[in-house]
Length: 286
Image 1 (cartoon, rainbow, N blue to C red):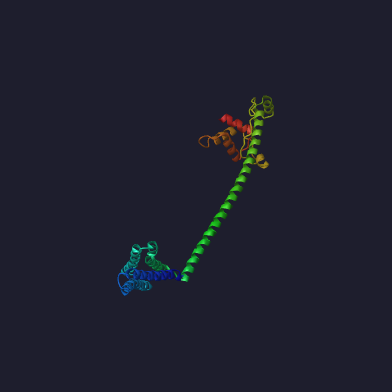
Image 2: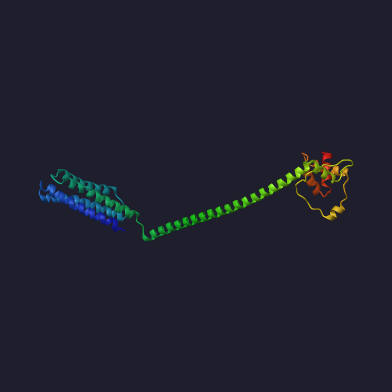
């Protein structure tokens, strides 16, 4: 992995040094003796290489020196400046020389990238631990997503079942209510009819002498079965006793109880009286 960053930097450095030395020899060789031009070229490349070597030594020790880095970049800029000046003064091939004038700066940039890679490089064991942690996190996330999807599907199924059951119950209740409403309408029509009313009234027992009670509809409410023995053990109440009991139960709470509530409490208390007598007592008291 280290070779992926150091080899391009070494290759770019070599090309840059050779190109800088060649340009100095060609450019200054016509103005000064070639040994002088060679010394100038080697000086630029030597300074560049020396500062680079010192930077690498400091990097190997885990240290960094800004002055050395600044000097190294200065030599790189000088080399790039020499290439740019030669390209601008060349009689031909100016564009080609300008195209390679960035090589010294590029070489310094590659060494900078290599240094950053070294400072952030991890051992294989650390990389394996990181990969294991990442894989564990991905596994947990996948399990959590699967659990959420399963819970959502289960809840959807449950809601569907509850909704369907509720719809069936509602249909049954509606049908029952319709049947009860029809039966109640039939009873009400029978009660309101003159002939039917007189026929039903004639078969009801008299509450008081010379008074014929009016046939009433049955009261819907909770019922409590009473055994035969309890009916035989309890003696029939007189009208006055029945009136007193109804009045007492009716005024046991404030506001006064309705007939249905009074009848329920009357039956719950264990008293016995026919519906006709109980309603007649209620009318007398109320």
